[in-house]
View 1 (cartoon, rainbow, N blue to C red):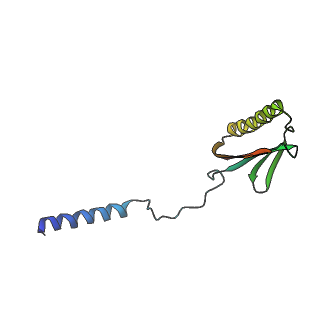
View 2: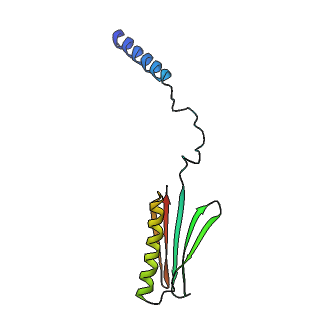
View 3: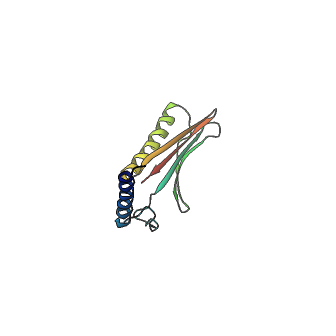
Length: 122
């Protein structure tokens, strides 16, 4: 190996080490736990519409043992189904206006109904 190349490599390494140590924020620096204002908030909205059992509802899970239940119409035809889905959309729109966004959703279709789950984050 040539000496000028070796000296250049050592000098470059020294510069990188110095620059890395002069940086005030290190990738190994500890950070404090997120505060309430910075913490991500998650809400789960689950709608259950069971035709065979004759009940339908929305449950909203806010965490910390806070749950809200909204009764939906019993499914008896297209009109009640449309009313229920409009209520679900109203709940999702309300949460969206509060700063929540849907990050995932799933649908479980059953022979006697369906269960929809929406995960929202703020």
